[in-house]
Length: 472
Image: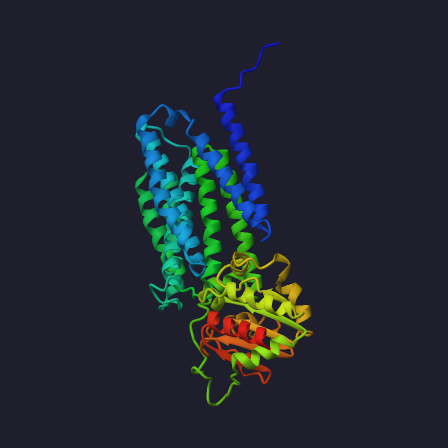
């Protein structure tokens, strides 16, 4: 029998297979807050392995210029990305996801174009299916790039987070889409590369006008959808480059992104088309000032009084929201929970799926403060216990506890699953003011006779509550 030789190409394919398995295991780990850190590390290790083995390709290994350019690009990217990722505030995490995702989509589009140019430079006429794959990568990657850029500037408040609309908007969007389809067909029929540049420009425009009418409350859902688009663009590039690794990795990102988008839509009680085309959050209906609307008075309390109530309660449910993240109050919230548990008070955190700006935002924030995982209960697990809670302590949340979702047909959030804070015996609301949340609508829970308002910075107020509980 002839002995088989294990070549470098075989080693590379084996490494890619291991990397693919690592990506799948990473997604499995990321599905649970308890194992998310390990999942992230596994995914990073798999990516490092795949990148390292890519340097064994003859195109890089035997070309000094390409090798040097690749290394320079990696160093340049690391110099930008590492400090940004390390020092970004948790409240800015969605913006970070958006911009990183957009860069990925843009890279996929550029790779597709460069490969097509390379084939034309060699005088080769690519097969129709190859051209189709390139055009698909250009379209999806460009939409993801420009759309993610607009999502970033909206969340960063460089432009208004409210929907930007104008007459005939949907018609214009449709016309741009139709022209892109026509350009793709012409490119496939004629084989002319000139149409690719037209498709690139129109796709960038489509990404911008697609995202502009989406309000700030819905931008996180949009980011998840654009993340799925980037995955599909990467998969298309994988077909162009004949890379099974890119095909599988892109498909995993695309599939997980669309699943997350559906979960977020369900958590908001709305369909994806409604989120994308309804210009949700365009109108603010709240009229209350710092201390509430004079026509609808609210009951304001003091930290000392609320601290006594908390100290002598049997069960306290803490419901965090984006305001907690803005105030960086996660550590103080943990201190309050520990102070209550020391007095024998049953305490846990109720987490809404879209609390904050991204799914898992609150879980990561509280895990960062070393809150035990078993004290973080998801909405479906927490709601059955709300009716037996003595106190629901709402910290910076608004829309996710708004009873209009249950009781007001016609409300923009009607049908959205919420945490049933209104069922608790007492409701303590920590807010800076009476302004509405992302949805831009008033919250009747603020005016409930059971509700006591504590106005001020969440971190400062929670610290006063810790002191009051310890002194009670």
